[in-house]
Length: 493
Image (cartoon, rainbow, N blue to C red; front, side, top):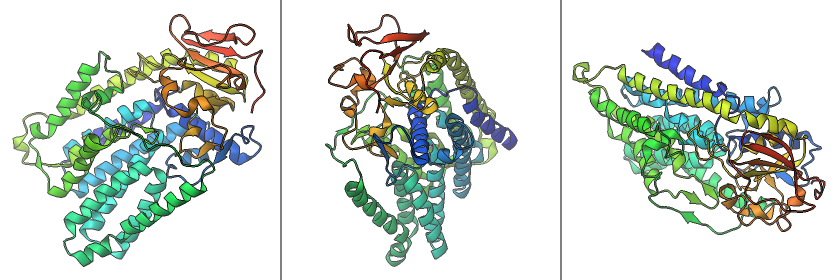
């Protein structure tokens, strides 16, 4: 069964190549960041007057894609990193389970969650950082059980890597590591010494904050807005296997699969593990309950940690006598295979559904500014409500253009708009939900864009101006249309 398990894991990792472009909503933006960074580093980028590189950011999990992009297309580099991150995530979870003495039969719970809500929303840096976070948790556990100078140094080095990989994953993993330390070290003097790696990271965090606030070209300003509540997604864990589509007909199947995985430890006759094995799941559940859905311009805060719920649930059980099992050990693998079968079927359907975009992309000349006008971001094939939200950013990745809405306006990004260069219309999040709402052609600088990538079903909503400045249709295919600003376009940048 171990051979079958790892064969399944390898197959799941290979699914990133089963579709030309994975149905991951934010992935085009992250790919566009890699392309911009590579071009800026080469020098002579057309977008140099608009953009700058901000090295002081804990958001480098996707950084290796930059190196790979010199040897392969950016999209292939991201696919390779995602596949390696998936393999690393499962391997790290298995190692953590072994250290905690967990039930080997429950390793199957490590298989599906990588392809849930975090995959559907395309949180690529978080997915790449996930195996580093689990590896840090494993290192923190070993340090807490027997703190020495050697384990402290290893813990500190791993923590530094995690800090610069992804700030949120860093905070999450350190909360778990800190609780491990409190549970295992009872002597106050020993606890103070064992906590030195965490204290050092606290100093680094403060230094980063000061450098961030004072050193960023675009000042860190704005209200600290929070959004929290028991919304549908916070109360609907099974649907997170289906991305974001709550009306997908397969959601009933996902709910059954999720229930079977929750019941698996009991039906296999497992019992609860020691108290320290409960810590990772406890922190994940607390994040799910207490963390806002949005804070300071960063969305999907608590949702991304759904990635860890099933894997950490598996850690809290240890095997009993096999005679206590109430079902075949093949049932849990079958549950994962059904999930992967649905996943593969979605990818096959999405490949056909998204194919018309390739004609529109090919019709645009390279290296110009473009505006993404996505009136309908839903994908019936992928079961996602906004798979296409940032799809036009593939023009930025593969044709050297610059597409708005652009992640370069967000604080954590490596490539950011310069001060005073952020398009005014894109200072708020409402654009993706309502492209036509309140957009003013003159006020919001539409003359800067040569191309408009439009996705819509049925008649085009009122968006373009009438008269001389009305863009002309260049190519239309399926739900996608490409319009060109031929009369009122100002050469960019």
